[in-house]
Image: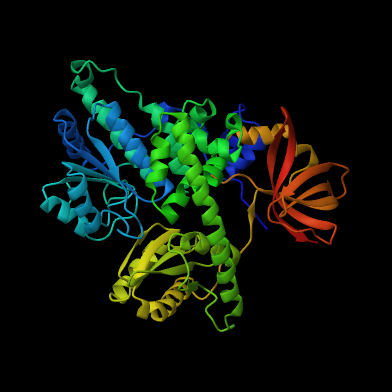
Length: 564
């Protein structure tokens, strides 16, 4: 296990208002004291390229009562972004606002020609706004414009070399864009656009002229928090403000009825909700609809104004999630079996798998599981019509979108389509190119890593004394949330003796631990962990607050247990 280095200069710069326990943690994450302030006035200003063009177009569409169509993506970020766009436009007087989400099995990803033709036929929009997609939709955008449909693209994915011919593109990752943070999720970009629109309309006295109260877009921050956490974007200060404010609203139940309905099913206590609960409990249920059927069920759940309607949608999402878990379990078992049977001369730098029976909506989760188990980039493919569609999950040392760019330049006929982020990407290839892709992909990664696999050490915040392993410090960490990508929740380690252990819920290990050479005893839980024969273990853990019947106690959330 590796221990994070503490920036001593930064540590000394902190005021006495910050407890020493937290100073170590913040200084190890290179966070200044000013970056710890999570208040809405601290949000960055919306200085996006092409923003003025988008605002003028939106103003015209609303004031002339034109049809506006939101085209989203089929994941939780896309669903929340769609809900934010629809709610914001309706709050600002949009009378004809609707949404259409690509079905991954029929339309493919983004603003494709297929979805544009369907939009024209079924909705006949004046304006299409993409959310969480569109930056790579060259053909679909051109088709929309040729059909006299105006197009605003809002996206956060990395742009290709050639941009679509949209009226306006709002994306912090556009080359030359002056927006300081490049880490917004799709829902964050969407929220910024409509926040700017509200300001723009206020400047025109629009709300006063139409006898409307000025809308409070803070009402949408619960959705922004959910989408931001779900998409696992980097939690810089700006994103932490968005998530923190959204979580506050959810805890106060001043939020989407859909989120409350899903939380009811998960039995998560709303009052103590953490960002991780959004990521592990709410988002997977919304994602399940997009993976197995149609994400519109998730969007409708988030848009519900009536709690009973929301509960009905949430129950459907729960069914999808159950199916997703069963299919995921089968595919993971088969994938792990394939890897176990591979010959030792297979590339140790990447895993590339395909099976005729696998579900294209679930390959991304399986790729993620393989990546965690083997700590190398993993690509998993499923059959989709005449193509193989794959999802890749990568490791910090390999920027996977850049790597696919390189492969595409060197082998232009190998990949049909691709797009994504540093850590995740999607792509399509012809079935006959699978073996070649597997070889080229593995060789490219090996070359990128100079033939050296990265170390697999767990990064921790070091050992704690028994005096530091307290409920008070666990509560301090809760108050310092949200934690997440780029602002990781602290993991500590120590050597313990197992005094008692039992399996609960058929697959989780509940144990009583005594710190070696100290009399202090702690309760811990390790998910998906079997009983251990050895009594001496090195444990990596998080300090957690366990709430039960109104009482709070310290619990160690165990990340790993190594026999000593």
